[in-house]
Each structure stands twice: as structure tokens, then as C-alpha cells.
Length: 288
Length: 289
Image (cartoon, rainbow over all chains, first blue to last red; front, side):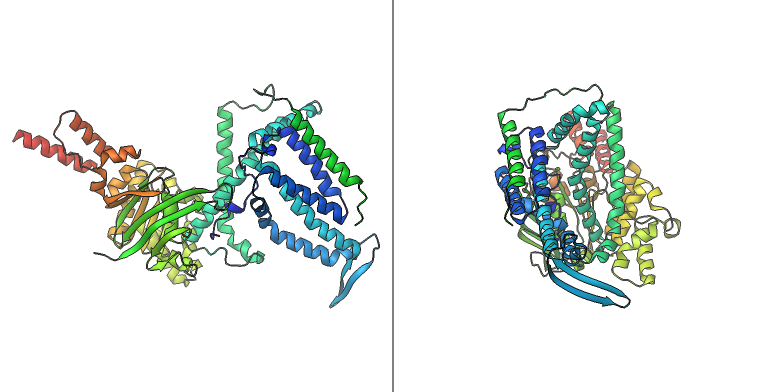
């Protein structure tokens, strides 16, 4: 891997064109199904249930025709956080276990006047492992949604799903637009970040040397990057405002879409499949 | 003949390699630069020229083919790209966007400080670099970076690279977006860096006028390949090929060709306004005599 080639690791905000069933689904059906499956992923509280949810998400990735390795590479950037998070959960969560489940390991630790303890209980171990599985499943699921849906149809989907709430003054169009703009610029900012790292490296900056886990050193090195990135973000925002205003953009009031396709059989079927899956995950008495 | 300092052979590079979005940016570029050159790499947008120059200081490593810079093989993982970056200064497109320190002097000092130069040495390097780009040390060192004009900011960014005291200077689209005055000043500074400071200079551009004014040797890229190279006059004489590549020729040469088409006996191998004026003068005097 090249030293600065990290736009490659950013799968969020990318769209990979394709012809799979997931690509062809209506964005509204896709979003609905996404929320339903998401519910299964984050609420199931058994080892087997989590494993099944993860497998189902992996199945969705395979269905999209996008290489699993590429989708998985989206997990890499958050790996350090995931490791720290898991480690802390593993060591300390048992101290606060309200269920009173069996203690598997306990280690007292005296630091001068302070007393610490590492505790692992049956329940805390389960929650720790579930946390990891859930986060990975979440990332895979979100990536699959966005990798198979271009930003315009995603925004349209959100807008039309939020339309019924207009009566209680939910600005559906504006929410969709803010989301679409933010999303649209993720790869742009990633590119810019890469360009700036290269530019600063060209004048002597040293990146990439400290390990992934040397947070303080990495943070200090980022000053020559973060300042220009923010300056650039504000400049871009201003230009975007100018562009929108010069085209008399006034928000969603009175706008109607040129085409509003109906949901077809495959959209309803996939929604039904998602609902059936989630209900099944909830209702099966998992032995573990 | 001067020694060869950059040798690129059959270079290939892919972006987003190993992902479904993979695209090939460079496919078989060859390039050779000798010390003391004042060269231009020109090509249309997407011709791969910016990708190629990022190989010259080891920001990118060749995916296929070889890149040797100052005798170091960049295909070899063990080659220290950081050490190479002190010898090869690369100035990116719109480099004013990479400034980050509130004061001009501190921003330029970033490089030398990263190299852990002692304070007097940092000061000397900053002073030299600023003078080379036409920014007076005392007048500018404490100015607020983000309050400068676009042209001034670009020269600060150039000074930031010069403070590393590179032997080879590579500039990607150095004049893009500058007003005529800023452009003339910058071109003057670049010319002086080559003539007075003895640097080898490579500019990357799709602006034929800049290339004609500055370069002596030219490498033309198209579709990720080297398609032409030679002396600047030699290249701009191949008008039809350049038009085919949608590159065109300098405005002055264009004018000379127009005049000739209109029936005037004018030399067409002119590259600058002065040369055209001279050609027209000779033409009119020879007719009078």
C-alpha cells in the first residue's frame, strides 16, 4: 500500500455503480429495509442472534456484488477506536454488572490511595463481544446501503420518507439536502486531506511514522493538515452558497419531483423479507 | 553532457488499486532529466502528469516500471523517500492552500524545523528562500499569512519548499489562477532559480504560453503515456500533432501562423512576443531593402 493512499480506505460516501438487486431497489424501500435490519442488528442480545445478524449483513454485501474485502476495508480506519473501546469494556464493564452474573475473573489493583479492579463477568464478556460484532455489522450494513445507492436517489428517498411529517413542521427537504451535501463532500475532503498530507510531506513533514496507536504524536502532526482542511471547507461552503443563491434556491417549498416512481413488487418483497428477518431474530429463543 | 538525475522507465500507476473503483492513471511513461535542465512536462487534464511528478519525490511508488532519482531506486521499499524529499522539492497545484501558520516566516520555517536545523540555520534558510521569491525578509516575515494576496501567498508556499534547499525543483501548474502581474513575477522567480541558484527545474503545465516562455526541453504526455519529447522549438514546430492532442501552441506562435496564412512571409517558429516582433521587423526591413 502506498504511504499516502488513504482515499482507498474511505468507503463511506463512495458509490460503486452496479446492476445487482440492491442497486435496483427503490431508495425508499432500501432505506426502510435498512432501518428494519438495523433494528435486528442492534437489539438482539444473544451470541447466536448476533452471529446470525452479522451473517445476514455479510449476505447482503455478497448480494450487492461489491467485493467483501472492499466493504470490510471501511472498518480499518476505526480499528484503533474499536480496540481501545473493546479493551476497556473487557476490563471494566464487569465492575458495573447489575445482573449479578457469574464472575469469571477478578483482579484487584492498588495504586497508592486508589483501589481499582478488573472484573470480567459472564454478562460483561457477552456485552463486550456483542459490541464488536454489532459495530462491524453496522459499518458493513451502512456501507452496503451507500455503496449501492447514489447520493441523489438517497436524498430523494429520505425526502419522500420525511414528507408525511411536513404537517408537524419537519423540514424534510432541507434535512435531505443537508445530509446529501455533507455526504457528497466526504470523498472530496478525503482527497483534499491526501493532497495536503502530500504537500506538507513535500516540505519536510513526517507522517505515517508513528504507529497507529501513538495518538498524541499523530495529533501534533496533524496541525499543518487540519488548519488548511478547515480553511478549504469554509471556502467550499461559501462557494456552494453562492452557487445555490445565484440559482435562486429557496428550499423545498412548492417543489415537485419530475419523476416519482411507484414502489414495485421487488421493493415490497424486500421490505417484507427485512421485516420477516427481524421478527425472526427477535422471536427465536436463541439457546446461547 | 550533464549527469542524468531522473530516469523514469515504463512507469505505471493505478488509483484506488484493489478496489472496484480502480482506474489507471499512468501507463508506460518514460522520462529523463539531466542536472541543469529547465524542462516542462505538458499534457491535457487527465494525461497523468501530476501523477508522474508525485513519483519524483517518492510520494507515490511505481506500481510497475522503474523510477530512479539521484541514483535511488524508488521501486525498492528500502529507499528512504523522506531523505529524497530534501533533494527534490515538489510544489503542488494551488500551493497557497497548504499554508497553515499565521505568520509568513513561521510557515516558511516549517520545513527547516522539521529537519531539526539549529535556529540560526532556520533563519538563514528562511531569509534566502524569501529573497529568492522576491519577498523581502524584513518586510514580510511577520506579516499575517492569510492577509496576503493570492500571488504573495503562492510565493510564500514556494519559499516553504525552497527552504529545504532542494537540488531539483518540481512545480505543478505554477501559474494557475494568478493575475498577469503575479504570473510574470512568479515566472521571473523561477527563471532566476534556474539561472542564478543553479537549480534543475521542472514545470508541469497545460498552459502552452508558460511552457514556451520558460522551458528548454519538453515532455508531452497524453493518456498516461509519453507521446513526444525534445527541445521546446522542436516540439512547438509539430503543430498538427499538438492540435490533435488538443494542446495547441502558444498564442504568439498561433498569431505567426495566422499572419502567414494571410499571406505575410513571417517565421512561424517564434515562441515569445519579442521573437515575433523581431521576426516582423526583419520581414519588413528585408522587403524594404
